[in-house]
Image (cartoon, rainbow, N blue to C red; front, side, top):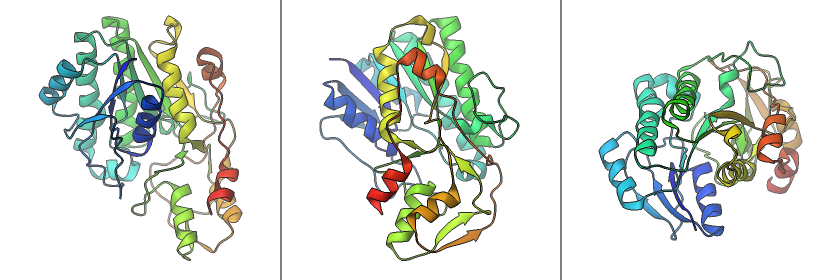
Length: 301
C-alpha cells in the first residue's frame, strides 16, 4: 500500500482520483480549502484523511508532509477557470505557481517518489495547429495558462536540478461525474445537460464552431495512476497530453442533446480548436482513452 497526497482532492477531478486510489488499496490524504468558486458541491471520501488548508500555506502543508509522509503527490489544486483567473491574476499566480514551487521543494526535502502535476491544453493557444503535440511551443493567451506553463517549467527544473521525479499532464476538456455546474463559466458538457434538463436554452459561446477534444474524467484518473505505476526514467520531467485524439464542435454537442440553444458573446483568451496528439502517452505510459462524449451525453440527457 502506498501513501498518496492529493491537493484539490475534494473537487471534480481530484475527488474522482481519490476514490480510485482508495479503491486500489492506497492510503490517501487530501489537502483542499474548499475555495473553488465554480463548485456547488465538494466531495469527501470517508476513508481518506483531510486537511482544510490552502496549498499557499506552506507551513501547514509541510506539517501534513511530516505527519503523513507521502510516497506520491498529485497536485490538482488550482485556480482552474480561465475567466476567473483573469479577474484574479495575483491569486492565480500564488496558487498555480508559487504553491507548486513550495510543494516541489517539500517533495525534494522529504524524498517523495513522484510528483504529478495537473496542467492544461490551453497552453497551446492559437498559433499551434491541430493535432497538438507536446513538443509545440507554448502560446499562452491568459493568466491561467501562463501560470500553468510556468508550473510545468518548475517541474522540469526540479527533476533536472534536484532529482524530484515529476510527471506533467495537459488535460483537454474534461467532463464526467461531479463536474462543476455553477455559473456561466462552468464546463460546457455539464452546463448544457443541466440547461437541457431544466428546460432552458443551451448557451453557446460565439457561433459554436469551436472544436474541443472532450476527455472523460475516468481517463484522466487512469493517466494519473499510470504515472506512479511506471518507473521508467524517460517519463520524468515530461509533458503528456491527456485527450482522445477526436474533437467535436460545441454546436455538435448542442445538436446531439437536442434542445433549444442560443448564442452568446465570444470570450477572450480561448483557443478556437483543440485536438490532442496522444501518441506519446500511449507509447510511454501504455495509456488508452475509453470515454466517448456522444455516448456519455446520450446516456445522461
